[in-house]
Amino acid sequence: MFKKFRKNDNRQPQCDTLDLQHIPEHIAIIMDGNGRWAKQRKMPRIKGHFQGMETIKAITREVSTLGVKYLTLYAFSTENWSRPQEEINYIMGLPVNFLNTFLPELIEKNVKVETIGFVDELPTKTIQAIEEAKLKTADNTGLTLIFAINYGGRAEIMHGIQNAIKHFKHASESEIEQLTEKDFSRFLMTADFPDPDLLIRTSGEQRISNFLIWQLSYSEFIFNEKMWPEFDAEDLQACIKTYQSRQRRFGGL
Ligand code: FPP
Image (tube, rainbow, N blue to C red):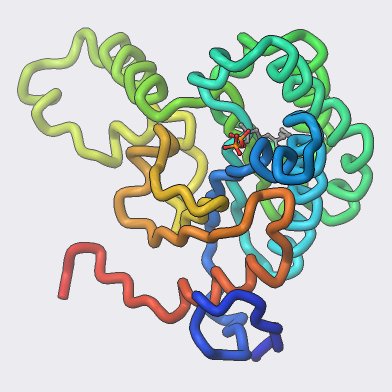
């Protein structure tokens, strides 16, 4: 089964079909470029974040239609607290706005909302909106939409190590030596989700910025030049097409 897609980025392969049998199960996105998009238009940075939220809706619709099972979005990092307080306040209000305007559609599309990150450190109104969305979508079985919010990969691993030490404090030396990567993965915030198949970062930056540093070990990386507020369904399809043209070997031949 093939779906037509129109190409609008000449860095992507010259191909006009998307193989719906090989859609990545899990896509992770670093939504970068909100501030620059706004600045280019002589608007305040927060306008970029607002428009970025609208892009989240469009991309969620698209991945849900394509049959992607997990979409993880880097919404706020543990390092983002160093931004101006006004910008932080605005970003913290966005989940409230997003869920007020989009939760009925998420429910209708059978989308389950999840988070990774230190959510309990967020403002109360943000926590309430997220908790309500999680509760109302808990039984949904379609796309799982995971917001990484107050998330950092190193902090996640440290937190996982602390919990593992507490859990195994009575274990023998040989039991500890037999622990596997899979055993440790259960102590990460992503314990319930598979590793991403595809990482997309917008805005042309080529870094992972402390995002899912354990889980991205074997993911395909695609860096797209567009700013996140202008990234659209066609761009996403082009990224998936590029992903489909790559051979994943997981260290083998
Ligand atoms: C990166 O752009 C974007 C962010 C740090 C925030 C992204 C947050 C949202 C799009 C909204 C989150 C909404 C929900 C529903 C949780 P940047 O500001 O670093 O852009 P720049 O690199 O151009 O300055």
